Image (cartoon, rainbow, N blue to C red):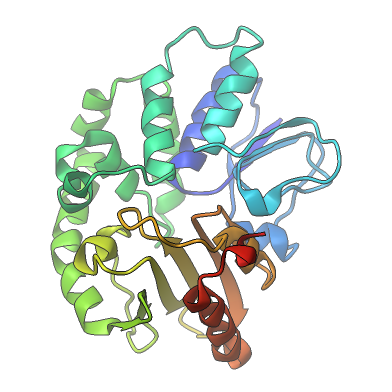
Length: 301
């Protein structure tokens, strides 16, 4: 039995819970949602897929993204919830598998994955241990999967204070703090505001800067949503478009997950992403942004 999930904080906590509830006998298979959607991920019988689109070959499936809502009966659980980890937690708790040892971890995962954050948390994540740890989970190089696996192991057995004492975790946390300080400069320089939508375009940069993805809402408080555009890899063959509702200005009415599902992506009502072929990306981006600017409630259907 193998866990298949994505490399973000919710995916890592999903893996923590599944290791605690099931007999896992294989390494975690880390994939991105687009790899499942594009049929590039090798899903097989016995796999438990979590926090990803449904795949017919898996044996159990857990998710919470509105764009992935199943239209058939599946084994596992689906719910419109703050996190996929919360869906898994409730599923196994009903079976008596968890006795309270993960309550704090789930509460923090729900908060982080649903972006239920305060301005202080956005501006000073270093003051909030789980939030800071979540920002160290990035997909940049060959060593990252080993780090994700390490976090799964530690979060399953250690309190957050002990996790943060690990030398590699501490080093990555320090790097995140430095990056966040620089990220505001890149956002300001590469962002334009169009009808209360902040549009950050990093396609002109050889190296895409990393930082707090919610910082844009503090920098541009009058906006109702943000869009970030970047190339997926050095070959510049695909463009990644990420869109989110402002977590401070609640006036965006578009269901972003459903909107992006029309373009091969998906996500939540409040945030989502899609990968586009570079040759035709701009035309599709313009169409998506037109819907966002119109901000009509009927587009949320």
